[in-house]
Image (tube, rainbow, N blue to C red; front, side):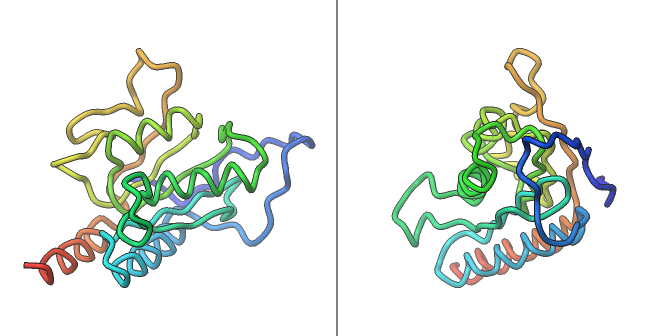
Amino acid sequence: MSTDAPSDRSEDPADPAPTGPEVGDDEAMGLALAEAATAAGHGDVPVGAVALHRGRVIASRHNERELRGDPAAHAELLVLSDAAAALGTWRLAEVTVVVTLEPCPMCAGGLVAARVRRLVFGAADPKAGACGSLYNLCADPRLNHEVEIAAGLRADEASLLLKEFFGGRR
């Protein structure tokens, strides 16, 4: 489980200064859960993600596959794209991504490719999870980067959103 301790705070003057209040993992997960609920509102699987840079929110997104008709419009990939735009670089080495559901192989690959420092996720995904359940792409020493993982934060709340969504479709 994760703590609400802020991530490393490098004082590199070349880095863009984050704005807004600092948030811990629990509060960031609350924002991700709100994003997930928004996804369900337009027929997408309720997954939400938030990107933190030095403890401050720089991006938040939810699944938009149905909304956009785009198979790659997962919350994690959308939040990575927004975070890169906010920071002006694809290298997200100071970023923590907080997401309601364990990332799939595509999204875990995106986290590794973006050099994300840390991942916090809520519910495990025993059918498609690639950060500990089926695979662990984020901690594979054969790859060029490893992402620190904290699993299970507010997992019951994230699981409930998914159960309610899929229960309503049956």
